[in-house]
Each structure stands twice: as C-alpha cells, then as structure tokens.
Length: 557
Image (cartoon, rainbow, N blue to C red; front, top):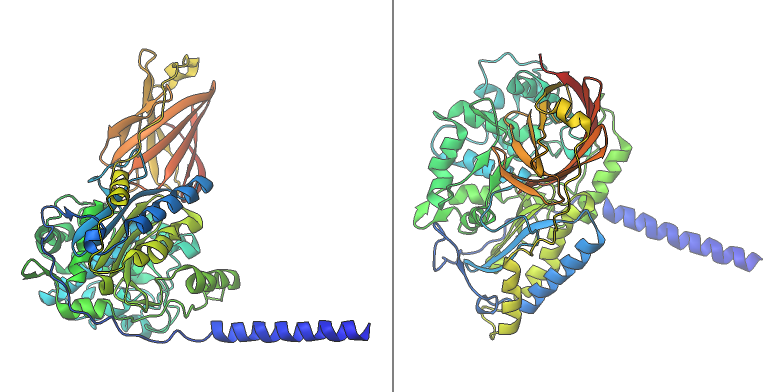
C-alpha cells in the first residue's frame, strides 16, 4: 500500500511539473518579429482585366496534393454541417493554378461578402489618404480630426488615441463589439441615431497601446475618418485610388446614410478581385508600373504592432475581468488561429511571413511572399469550421509548393480543373400543396415589425394559387429591401435583388405557419424564417448564423 501511495505521489508530482511547465510556456509573451524580407517577382501578366490560368506543375505545385485538399474538405464537409465553402482559389507566380467551387449555387465571377476582410482594404485606403495629404500621419489624433464634435468621456487616454491605435486595434476604448462579446457594442452602435458620436463617446478601458482588443468600432472609426477627410464619398475615393487601377469594377459596400461606410465589413467582391488585393501587397503596393500605395505603407502594414496571442482579459460592462471569456479567447488565440502571431494595420500576421485578411464565416485572403503565393476562400461556415480554410492552407496549399517547375501531371491537373465547375443540383420538383385559407387573407398585407436585432422593419408575403411560388419582401438594416420568389414545389427560385441573389423554398407547416429556407448567394448564412399568423399579428422567428430571434408586428397603418 505504501508503495502504491509513493507511485501515485510520484505521478502527481510529474503531472504537476508538466502542467506548471506548460503554463509557464503558455503564458510567455510572444516574441516580436519583423516582416518577411523579399524582392517581388513581377508577374508575366497583370490581371487588371483577367487572371491567366496555368497547371499547378507549371508553377511548381503538386496537383495531387491540391486534390487531396479537395478530398479532405469534401469528407470534412460531409461530416460537419457547419463547414460550407463557396470557393477556393490558389494563385502562384501570378497564375491561377486551382479553383474549387463546391456550392451548386455559387458560380465563378459572382460577388461574395468578405466581412472583416474589408478591414484590410480600409487600411490600404488610410495609407493612400495619408500619401495624398488628407491625413497628417498615423500619429494624428482622432479627437483632432473630429475637433468640431463635443465628445464625452474625454480624458487623457482618449485624447491620445491615434490613427495608428485604430489600425492596430489598441485604442483602449471599451467597445465590447466583437464576436467575443456577441457583438453587444456593435448592435448598440447600430441602434443609435449618430453612429460616429456613439463611437467617439465610448468610455476608455485602458491607455492606447496597452491592450489588443479586436474591435469592429475601431475600423468603423477609420471609415468615419476617411468620410471626414475626403472630398467625395469613400467608395468613390476607393474606386478612384484603388479599385479602378486594379480593374475591380464591381463592388458592393453597405452604408450608413449616404456618406458613411460600414467599414468593419459588408463589402462584396468577386474572389478573383479579392486576390488582386493580395497581388498588390505581394508586389509591395505596385501595380503594372503604378505605385498604388507606398512601399513604406505596405511594410508598416505588415509589421506587427500588436500581438494577439498575448491575450488580455476580456472585460464585463463594468470593466471587471470576465474569466470565462478571457480563457476562451486565450485558448483560441494560442491554439486555433495559426495566422495570429501578430497584427499589423488591419492584417493578421504569422511569424513565417504569411499575412491574412480575414472575415467571419471563413473569408480568407492569405499571401505567402516566400512562395509567391495567394490563397482566397469564400465560405458560409460557422463555429470552429470557420478556421478550416486556414488549416487547408497550412496543411495542403503550402506543402504543395515544391519547386519553380514540376513535370506535367495531366491526369491530376485535369481532375483538379474539373472542380472549377460547381456540382449540379439534385433537386426534383414535387406537387404544389393546396394553399390554406389564411394564405389568401394575409397575402399582400405589409406587417410593420417591432424592434429586433436583425433590424427587420416590415414584411410582406404574396400568394397566388395559380403559381408554384410565393413572393416575400422585407426591409431591414440600413439598405436592404429584397423582394424574392419562394418555390412551393421543393425547387429553389432565384431572384436578383438589391442585396444579392436569393435562392428560396417554402412550405406551410400548419394552417397558420409558413416556413421559408433561403440562401443569399454569396452571403454567409442559410436562413430559416418561420411566419406564424395569430389574429392580425405576424410572429416571425428568424434563425441565421448570428442566432435565433422571435419578434412580431401588425398590419401597417
């Protein structure tokens, strides 16, 4: 018995030493590092009008490894409904070597929302504005730009916030507006009458530069700065100075009012055009003989100014530490995000020299200067599956780079090329069920909805028993006003709206409840709407990637 106790005591001691050693290692600050030094390889063809294509082997990449990536994704997606990629593109030496389009609804050369990858583009626009003298420098103070406003909570810390602090997410503002806080502060901003004033009035949690706290409002303020200093609206400025020279003609970007961009996200680009942003930075800001943004700005953008893996405490509303959220954030930064060794000017950096523009639900633009490589992903994934594209990059795309040129592998490269065409639909039309009596009574009525997180203002359904589809229209957020068809025979109906293309089916689940399943093609969620009619009231239960909410309303008067 004594011997057993000694053995157990020894095991406990070893475990304790192991745990303490792990904790000592885990809590060590992430070492600083410099941007990867390289000389850009000028592409043989500038893709201003279109990208040229090549086999992977002609550009030194292994087709079989890229096929393994596709097969790995297909198996993982079959096992997890959270994983759903719309497109993957691999570009080496200025040539597209692989395109994968797994979603039957999402076709090549269609717009896709890039969510927070928008932030990296806003950073480029700030750099251009500085070069043009519209902003003094990254050291210019935020309060000086908005000197005409009366700002609350104006202490020494807030007076010290600079453009640089906004770029590196180290403002010290107590915004609580990221996914870590369920976007609480961001929802509050969007409910306010004056978004800029709301953001400027927020209290301070720390001095600028003291803590990295990922903040959508920080980027929103960068957009507000651009709106303040440019003579035109920010999208026009972007077309003139950035998108136009790169041949990016089609951009959709949501706005608050006429002049204020929703700078933290809500930009839509084609995957090939998102890749052009990567090539611009791979070429250190130069594009076909024109310096779009300075070499110095690119270098500064990719120099780590903050280190997300040195995770700080996340704070409650009263600024006390929230241990649960802080632990979750620490684990995520240290073990789940290989691209987050450092953070530059709205770019995520790893210490091997790769850098990433990242958007929620799995939007990626990853650039590897060492390998002259660009990788883009558009996706509607959720949960931990949002990080799957990064895993595919590090485990398959990078290892596929083997040389400057490899022997031809026609069978593998042709098999890979077939994935550029989305798979065919497997839907079959069924009979259209007879409409319930209530359908005729509620058809065409516009219901005015109570306040809700989705900011849906009003809803209207139209039914016609002679047609195999219904119509659904609603207004929401700042600029959404879609009107789209809903298939009643099991076949999706496609409708181009001011938001994008909607693909929708619907059915009556009971005499008073109609349910719609909808995919906004190029957006990042599959939505489910339940419409329950009770007396003269409409009760809506809306489920999407951000959660499930129930709200109601009555006929508009």
